Length: 212
Ligand SMILES: Nc1ncnc2c1ncn2[C@@H]1O[C@H](COP(=O)(O)OP(=O)(O)OP(=O)(O)O)[C@@H](O)[C@H]1O
Ligand SMILES: [Mg+2]
Image 1: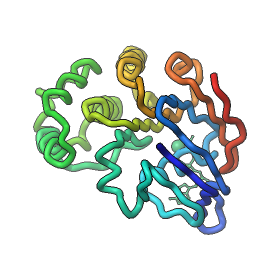
Image 2 (image 1 turned 90 degrees about the vertical axis):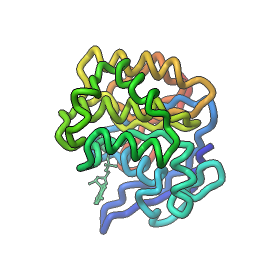
Image 3 (image 1 turned 120 degrees about the vertical axis):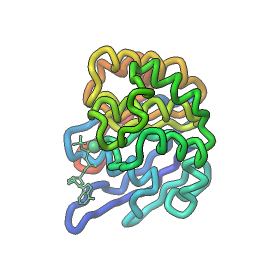
């Protein structure tokens, strides 16, 4: 589903990703690990089409994530490492998401409830004003409400309390069958139950890629 060939990304003299080639297929549930600065988020951002490759290529279901971003976003659920600085109120944001990507409003509410995020009292608050964990819970609820074949999470539980972490992994376990899911994490013990492939990165390269 995702085909990456010889992918390099440089920022000035920093080589953040160094000639990486890898494929991700349906049924893969991947833990992507490695030290701070190893290049994990850079790889995810290239997959999502936020960055242009310096060289090499990324294809998602045969499409180019930079050029065909709108099409790709329809089939991908993505929760970034840092929540975007959105000024819209939750009510406006929900309505925008439902219109632009066909997500069902009831499903967002349903998954928010599962994640113990009380949306109703916060509807008039700007997304920006939510606490770090509340933002994360909201983005997770949207990602689960969206019917996607590819689910990508960049350190999704970093801001979550222990109960919310358990809730997240329980919901993922129910959802991930026959999809491609990718979790960037520093805690392998958290994802051991839900992944079948472990990848380690260091200095912009993949150092280990094994089934588990
Ligand atoms: N937009 C950018 N401009 C300049 N340098 C960048 C940019 N994005 C990433 N880098 C650099 O690329 C390298 C890899 O960063 P990246 O965010 O991919 O690491 P990471 O593996 O996700 O780390 P962490 O575990 O801390 O999230 C770092 O040296 C970082 O400074
Ligand atoms: Mg990162």
